[in-house]
Image (tube, rainbow, N blue to C red; front, side, top):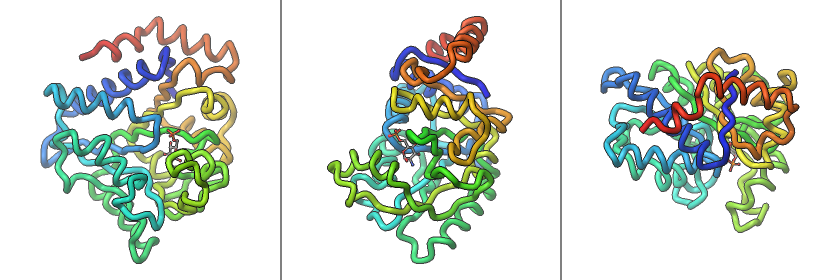
Length: 272
Ligand code: GLP
């Protein structure tokens, strides 16, 4: 697992966006052979999306031949609700780039048969040839997508009941009213994310410090589902300084030295 420590949220976001854009450019996608991108929601990726929008509007990267699969969606929330993940993705990203509507995939949390919807989603990912790059964030309890603590580390797309922790963390998007937060979600599984050819995780701010510690320093554990990424052959975590406060000084120093020697932060930060 590679860990990149950016100085702050802005540097993390620009770094991640440039990294993703470079991957798409190097792939040279066509309509017949599109690049398959996994997308998260939440506050962590907002800066990343803003910068990708800028790069697209400046003509530096195109999403014309990019196919997307979102990580998750609330169950029973109208797609037009401002906090649905459908709304989030169109408002913050898809409406501002040159992606084709038919290339966007988001789980339908209002499907009449939710289990069939999950199976259909896995099937569509397989038909697209698998995910080339899954971007993600983490919850304060280290969950990835909505794979709450205790989720199987080989899980596939399914229904999950949200924990009180997650409901409390997400109620900031629902007028700080926990009763308005849906209690269930459809989510890709940890196994679905692990199948991606590459994974890029954003982890920023002091509230994510414990999650970062468990994700990269402790053993693999189903109570911190993002720790499974330690088993991925091509996983990168890009964090900011604030998220590193629970790391051992030696761990912090190791990754800082490595990125200094390799020049990784500057290389992607200053790419475009
Ligand atoms: C939700 C999403 C996750 C996201 C997490 C963190 O639970 N399902 O995919 O990573 O929130 O969100 P934020 O980035 O707002 O802290």
